[in-house]
Length: 206
Image 1: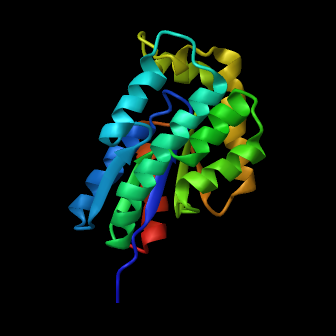
Image 2 (image 1 turned 90 degrees about the vertical axis):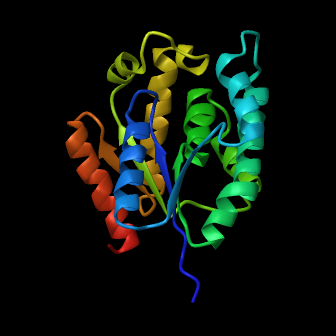
């Protein structure tokens, strides 16, 4: 019988610590002998790296529609050529950002039609949905403090944008409580890791 691959995504506003916790989770699973990979959106693949460079560092004007479709284009390529094959092989896929980032940032943050974005996400992912989404929640001030002194294009969007984005994430967690689990990112790194580890071990029945 083919073993099941699991798709786990890490979400949160910039500076929340999700990338660190993904790395911790990857190390933990690897040490337990569980085959897993780590990836990210945007920019995991060669095409995606070019899209990521535009999204984060392009100096000219990028329209909201252009930004949205660039993220979706990266996601479509990522799902079809990397994530879906890994899941079919029974591998655990850990992904730094996915569909909920588009809903939170472009939907709530940019104040676009969230329901329309959900439909576009379905097209881009071929209806592949994460088994677990770990939302690491912190307040905006703390996130901006942690994000550093050289913000990228999106990180320059302003406090109100990130407040709306954070509220969007929390709204999504309420809509999909079985999938999206909120972890308090303002606790110590060790406490956050313990919460993340518990969620993953419960999903994988370890």
